[in-house]
Length: 561
Image 1 (cartoon, rainbow, N blue to C red):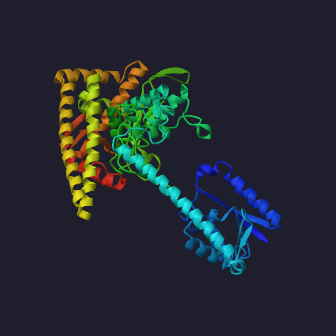
Image 2 (spheres, rainbow, N blue to C red):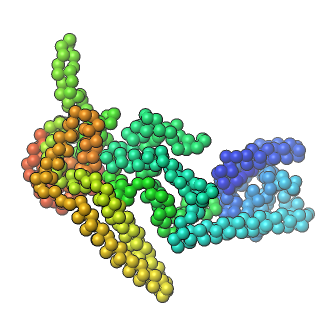
Image 3 (cartoon, rainbow, N blue to C red):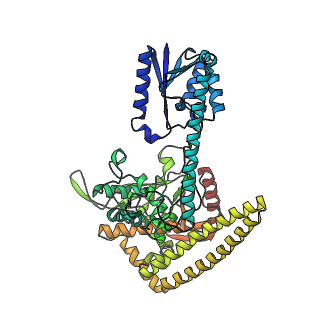
């Protein structure tokens, strides 16, 4: 007789151990003892029998469809370790599924009790069959009770967190913390915390994830995984994972994951102060506010920030990205045996045109000629007081401000959800909760206004002459002889420019237009960076579709003349 083995486990973690080998080994030995030919082995990895996923959408379901379609002989026997590997559904559904399968001529053999279930067995030994049904029912009940107890236990733990208890509900935490079983608390790992803080500092200074990863690999800094999950080096994707993990400011979001579900879902509100914060609220908010760099911006080479407007430059003809092309640096070039001095030169040109995608904008803009003029038009506005602030007192007030801003956003969302629930149910208790939430929202607004006033007072305001002098000092550092001074200044300025500029457009006639955030103002330059004028606009500035972007830019050029 021909046989097909079937193995299943509901957890991917079990699959990494001996579960597959053990089940397959038992099935093979059973078939050999019976003299059956094992023609195939079907596996459902990480698939739940409690939810019925394996018999509905899994590989076992696919096997039954193959039998129904005649791709597999109908007199085959499906061999499993025990019946609950096939299903832990309620008994009525188990019986229905078995009757459907054996009705096609298929047999089911269970290794643990040596039974072979087929139509003849059910008719001849109904008591044996009912015993199997009872065992299936017991397995279903055990799974159900275990799931309910586990869910209830986690629900109680989450409720305690929401009530203010901060005792960890699990030993799992971010990689820069370790769990002390004796104290039942998380402890920081100093060298890893230092890496997290460095990643945030460098990101806020304008450095990209790839450059940060390369720096950590060059030192080298050991990666944080364990065993097979330990990476051979730092990757930009892991840098992003750290930058986007709210655990860095102490926040913990409980999740639930139903049996058979592929993804976890958030359960309740985020818990503040669950972990020890390792970066400030201001740093967290600052990273959130950074605009992502567009590909093709030409940010620079080997850590040198050459193009301060990377990712902001657009072609006025097609709406595509203007590509930065570096030609040569200051130095000496030998040609025909003669040394000739060279000057740094690089250009901006339409990336779509360069790739042969049909754009008719063939103009090349000399970057070295443009940068001083473009900076002269906006640098004093881009470098705000916060750019020069380093006071610890300001840092503390800034953290309070950003923390209150986050709490206000969360409370606004909470009020909205409660209002929707009250409108749907009309429940008086829900209405009371909604009114209390509104009161807290107003309190938070007042606290945020007070924090902002205090922060503004602490930062102070420079006179126009003082501000002009400090901006000029930063401008000079952009070309400083010292590499680190120059790079740090250019990274920070690039980040500040992205806060006030939406994009800069270049057409085929040597016209350059810079659109400031929100599209309210546009400044027109020539190809040498000289300001020709400005205009107020009502044009939408952020359009992701290139054709729509091109149409918006065309309207902008008509307006600016």
